[in-house]
Length: 516
Image: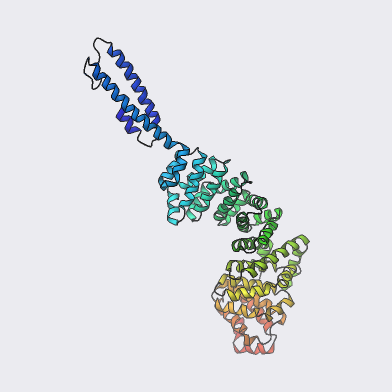
């Protein structure tokens, strides 16, 4: 029985103490039996004892007692090892598998879970280590700790930190989502609104988890906009909360329902405050521009820009459609402040391609209204847009949005002339020539040229500028693209109002392209 207990309850097993109690009970019964048999006229012989040999009996009992004493000492060692306080001190020294086993063993201990999650976050420095943590069940343990210890701020903070680290990889994000980790992060933000570290790590985890439209939709349903708004409102002096909050709101703003929540809460003003307070923080300015860009592309504007029939002149509809957006004075004021801050960010960080691209996207949306175009032009936005195209000529996506922004700003006659004076038409041509195979660049470039040459504006001697050649190449390269063909035909119509341009059109067989 002693050997059996030793096998069944090896070192480190949390059930050893129960086995030890079994052994103590067995020894007590044995002593009672020995006492009874000692007074019997014909005693039974215990194992290792000869009949009627009291000395051997005492030796046998002494040996069992000594063995039991050794195992009692071992019991104290095991209990000390299993003590949460002792485990907490040993966790930083544990290998990964032992760490996970310790967290599973002490699941009810918030101290062990908090330190364990924090240590797991430290293990996630490389893709291979994050994969190991996920495969060994680390994500399940972290999610379980968050769910078990909702009211413990240390567990919530370290648990969110661990999810933030693990969510760098797509597979881990999928596991976290399937286990309900996204909703637990929102719950942590709500339950510990006054704990700045929980707010930091909660927003950080959301920023990593919100990588697609489905996740953003779920976050909105879980109250993500409200939770992040509260974090930024209640912790205005914490740079990390402000930075991460701008990023989360920026991602959420790409969803129509979330955008409505952001506007209803006036979260835009919180982002304005953060960008004003931290103009030198490149990451915060970038996330802030993302959020302002997302809000600027409201449902109507986004649909208008993406679905617009390029055959129809944008000027013919601006009075009937876009002017309706200019009627709310408060909206005009907020959007004007947004323009001011985006201009400041682009001016402060000319080498940051993200800020330059988001700024051009933002201007393209805001320029759908007269008030927006005025704010951009008066603030020096035209110069910044052209400088962005010249300074980042290898970024195709940025150049696409440069064409879109210039095309939208060219809705005003006075602005069209200024764009031409600043070399904007040449910039559009250069972009189209450099990315001839890029369908989106050609679409937005053709639209920009259409707007810039509308009604004969800037049409003098375009043959020498290469504009005609650029349009012809676009038509040949994208013969099946209806938008490109219609927009080019419309631009060529306006260009042909000049006699010199008409001669160039005839020389280059442009009529054949139009007929085709």
